[in-house]
Every structure is written in structure tokens, then in C-alpha cells.
Image (cartoon, rainbow, N blue to C red; front, side, top):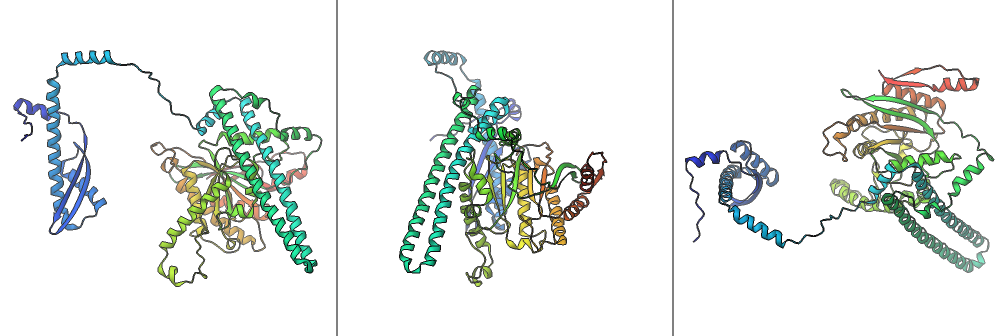
Length: 592
């Protein structure tokens, strides 16, 4: 029988053991505790040695076990005794192990070790010590290029995107032309069937043929668009990789002709001047939020025709330099910590943009998504998430809701989103927006009154929470929570709605946007407070009267405690003077 090695400890060794430093080791407690007829297996981990007294460490281990195992009361005393005995035994074991290792070190034959080392060096075969560096991802390469490239290379990147956009737009126009032609032929066949009822069989056959052609055209162009997207994506990534590795623009990129949109804008700018766009009201302010530590944010209240009118990457701006600067600004911040977002209002259908071919969907379709998934892929992925969320919601519904209400009368549908839900899509082919928040609303929002506990406002809270977590610093938000004005929207209704939205968003900003280090997932280990400055663009419908706009601005000044100082100026045009006075053009705002 083998016996444990005994260690003789004299008085001289006892003093050395007390000063001996025991290396920490993670020990596992795994025992079965029996109390009467009941048995429970308990596991626990503890780092030994520990700095706390033994009784305190026993309590720590006991609390850790109770959080995971949830043992009944009769097991408490037995568990504490077992833990105490186990800790003492583990301490003794580690002390003996450390002493044994120290004795082995003292008995080392250094001469033999030197001989062994020489023999090992003689037999050693040196190999190439080149380490395989981790290959950088495309987003890292792109960010490096955008931060270090000169203006010539940046201009070539934007020009290449414009060239790709024109190629895709031409294919989309050809598809729309074919679809429109077949749709008109189908309508003509339907009208003909109404006039010639005796030839119904022949007309039905013609309609079937046209519908088949329409399906074939859509399928054919969808395949062409997918193939074009894959080719453009690969070309774009190859170009960025070459710029990253060689710091030069590929020759085949330089040899390409400039985008037609740039040539057209330069040649037609002087020949055909565009009429001036109708002026929209726009007011900007600076606010300070917080009780003890105040943070500064920018607020802009403006009127626009549509929330998506400035999203096209290459629009019909007559100034090509402005188009280039807008696109370059979006690309520079694509993988940074200064993202921009737009809030769009959608129906309960997760595929609302695809089924209705909204203006937002058509804008995304005009250019190839070169960094993220296409808009169809991102929206289709939300359908699976919607199903999972609705199944969980259905399980949480009370029995009276799940069983007593007939299925035909219930508004709950697993295929649809609930009001207040939020869908998020990522984009690199839009201007002024890297992220789009799709807030689910319904028609009642255009007439009914809402409160701060409404599902819509809870969805707005999620937007500002996500903005704080993912460093989204610029948010464009529909202030009235509607796209267009209706007859039901009286002046008092608009003021009540804006009063609620202003107060709720002020609370959300105080909750999430005061200190980024507290909530940001990009800086999880940061202990320093990082001041985050946000820009909130409150958007109002363009058809809103000037009187209502002024009242909303005054309401904002009162809620956010902003004091306005007017500065008088001299202008040559008397009409311009009156307009500037009326709209209070020069504003310098600060909190009292």
C-alpha cells in the first residue's frame, strides 16, 4: 500500500511556512449533502487562499450556493459545516503542496540541468518564427483607408460609388419600364373583357399570358440585380483592399470615365438654373440637461416634406461638391462613434416597406449596399424575430385573453408586430443616416390622445436607449409622431402632442444620454465619464402653418428652460428684414 508522503516540520520550518506564499488556485466543492431522507448535490468554486476571515469566506460560499441551488432551510447548518471543513482541508492541502515543491527546488541538481539543456539545444531544430497575423476584416481596412487616405483617393471612392449607382439605376429603370408596359397591357385587357363579354374565354387567356410575362420579367430582373450587387460588392472590396495594402488607387479605377451625374451637373448648372426651393422653417437651439452634471445638446426644429427626402446617396443636387461632401461625411463616420439615425413610422407588417414599395425602399434599392446586408434581407430577418417575440408574448398573456376571446375577434397576430415595437436596419448607401429605426404605429395615432405610458412612447424610449448604447449622436425624429397633417389635427391637438413628446424625450435624454460610460456597450470597461453631445432634429410636416410652428417653438423654449436673445441686423431688402424678424433668425440660446 502506498502511503502519503510525510513531511517533517521542525520549529525552524514552522516560521518559514507562515511566511510562505501559497499560489492561488481555484478549488471546486462538489459533495452530496444528506438531511434525513433527502439528498442534494451541491457544487461551489472558491479561490484559495482568500483574504477574508474563514467565517466570512464560509458565508460567501454559502450565499453563492443558495443563489444557484435554492436549498431548503434544513440544509443550511449542514452546508455551512461542510463548507468550513472543506475550506480548511483545501488550505492544508495547498500548504503541503507548496512545501513539497519548495523542497524539490532545493534538491535540484543544477549540473544535471545544465547538461540536459545543452543536449536539448544540440537537438533543437530552428523553424521559421513568423507568426501568422490575424487577417483584418473589411470594416477595419475601410476605416483605416478613410482615416489615412488623401483627398484624391477619397474622391475616387465616392466617384466609384456614384458610377455603381448609375449602373444600378439604369437597370432598375429598364425593369420599371417593362413592368409598367405589361401592367398597362393587363389593364387594357381587363377593360376589353368588360366591353366584349362574348369573348371572355379569349380575354382570360390573354390576361394569363400577360401575368406570366410579368412574373418572368420580375424574376429575370431580380436575378440581374442580385448578380450586379455581388459583382459591385466584390469590386468595391477589392478596391479598398488594394488601397489598404499599397496606398494607391488601382489603375483600372483611374481609367474609368467620371460618373455621368457629375458631368451632367457641371454642364447644366449654368445653362438651366433650377428654381429656388420653397423655404422651410428651421430653428436651432442649444440646451443643457442634467441636475448636478450638465450635458450640452443641440436641438433643431424644422419643417420637411418627407423624412426620407434627404436620404438618397446621390440625389439631384445641382452642386456636385455638396453631394461629394455629404457622401464623404457619411462614409467617414460609418464605423465610428458618431452615427446618425432616422426614425420612420411603419405599419404592423414587418415587410411594410417591401409590400408597399415605399419611398424609403426605393431609395435603398437605387444603390448597392456595399457593407451590410440588403434591405430585403434585413427586413426578412425581422419576420423570424417577430414570430419568436409574439410566441413569447402569447405565453405571457392571461388565460382570459388566450382562451376566452375567439380567434376571429382577437387582434393578436403572430405574423404582425405590436404597436410600439422597434425594428432596426443598418445602411451605408444612404446620406445622413447610418441607422434607421422603424417605429410601429397605427392609424389611431393621427387622432387619439396618448399618454407617457403609451406603447408608442415606450418605443421612443427604446430608441434613445439604443442611441446611448451604440453611440448614435444624431437623431432625426418626427415630432408629431405622424407623417402628414390631417383635418383632425387642430392647433390644440398639435400643442398637446408636442408637449408630451418634448417632456418625454427630455426625460429619456436625462436617463440615457447624460453619461455614455454608464450604458455604452462599446466601452464596457471604461471608468471615465465620457461626455456625449447629441443632436436631435425634430421634424414637422411642411404643410403645418407658420402660426402653429411658432407656438411649438415657444413651447419648446418653456419646457427646456431656454432663454433666447435676439440680435438685430441691417439688410438691404425690406422684405427679408421682415421675414428675419418674424422667424427670429439669429438666436443664441442657453439655459438659465
